[in-house]
Amino acid sequence: MAARRPGVSGATSVTAADGAGPDAGSITLTGTTYNQNQLTLNAGAATNAVQVAGGAAAALTTITTSGDTVTVTGAVDLNARGLTVDSTAAGGSAAGANISFNQTIDGAGALTLTGGTLGDVTITGATGNGTALTGLTITGNDISLGNIGGAAAGGSGATSVTAADGAGPDAGSITLTGTTYNQNQLT
Image (cartoon, rainbow, N blue to C red; front, side, top):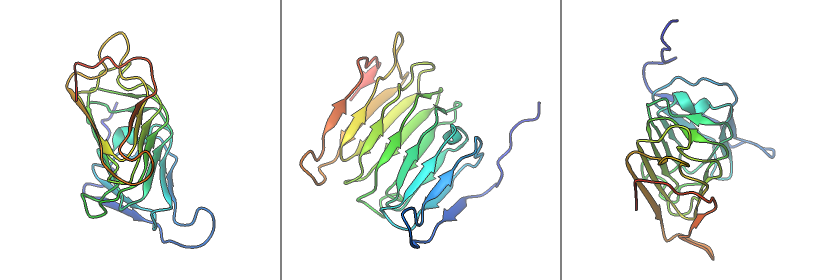
């Protein structure tokens, strides 16, 4: 079996203009493979969304938006590569935007999620229950986490969850919605 190769050897940028209509400017990735080291997605306005389905995030190492929400609807296998999702464009859009993962996240890689001062981060599926992550770092306004790990630790490295003092009645909250938080080191 031939090894997977990136579709592009350099950085890739996908920009959707802020047009008209209910989903104007949205970007939806519906395939199963996005074999690209760095992908910058700009949906055109902070109210528009970037959506990744079908476990597509597995082949990415970086998803960057400038204040656009990122929703991952498929199960994610980090494939020992790791994944960084940054809705603040490395601090250029400090407010950031919401980041959500709706299914399981597994794989011996590190996961870093940056929601900014106003972006909420939500993970509803179990993290590291099948294969422990090597690290987990989450920053955002309000953070809601499902289970981390199960019978074994969900991460082999350090886990850090930091809620920024943003805006709203529950600004800076951390909510643990699961029943298991089996982690070697949790800050």
